[in-house]
Length: 188
Image 1 (cartoon, rainbow, N blue to C red):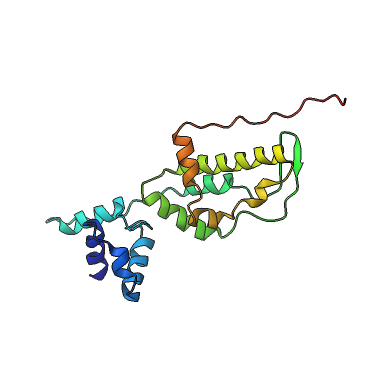
Image 2: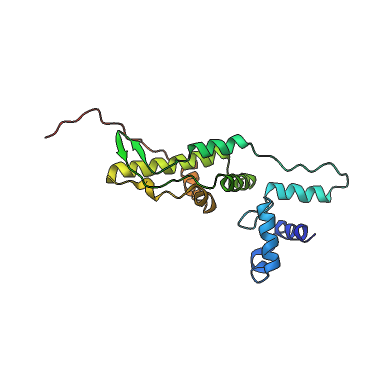
């Protein structure tokens, strides 16, 4: 009942964050309903949270089914995320020193929470990450230094919502002109 009451407070736009700051029990409840995908990290109710409240208020009871997120969407994102910071771009090889993919199951949970908030689609997350990677590769060519080595590991990338500015750029219509492989040069 505590979680339902807290969810109702979030739905009615009470400042739950400030209320829970000094109360460890409320902090744990907020973490729980966030982990279940009922509220966002900014203390806003998700579509699933709204549907749950509607279900609880309904006179007739049908089974409440939490929407499932396709495992394929996460797998597509995971495969697109660079495995390491080593890469070849525009014919130039850059040596890396670390793995970028980590904590696959934790990433899956976080990815699903992000999608359950209904603010971004899986394709937007994939496109944003690809945009970020391409920007780093292009900067590497220009500066002759591996900029992909500054890419966060996969879990940190999701937890810190590093994809958000790139989604905004894509929504605004920004594109990147990819460098082409040199066809041969002339030394002067």
